[in-house]
Length: 156
Image (tube, rainbow, N blue to C red; front, side, top):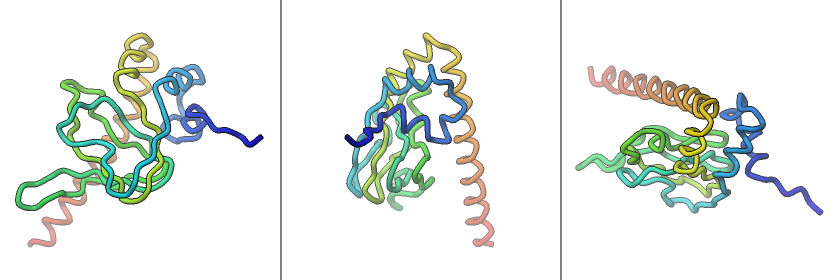
């Protein structure tokens, strides 16, 4: 029989979860499932209820926001081993951006309602999640700041 990999196995291998203890990975994996998307499918829709995030296992996802008269504007590209979806952490739990598959995507879907409940019951887990998400949000803010500065420097 072949090795069947579990959600916990995939989480344990991802850099995002490297600082998590075994017991935390066990709690997280109980909120996860493997999902598949075709190119063009939305993983998350802007302004919809935010109750999940995704760890990308295969493929590439674009994070974008719709601008009237301009269409979708890219905020970030997310590839293998990276995360999309922060809004499940913060009230009012509405997605701030779209996340759309650019290619075929395989991802771990982690249920935000489930995770919020587990984090409330285990503050160590909640702290670890906040710490990891804060690092990703800071990196994305810095990336977008550089992109904006580049745009304005070309307009001069």
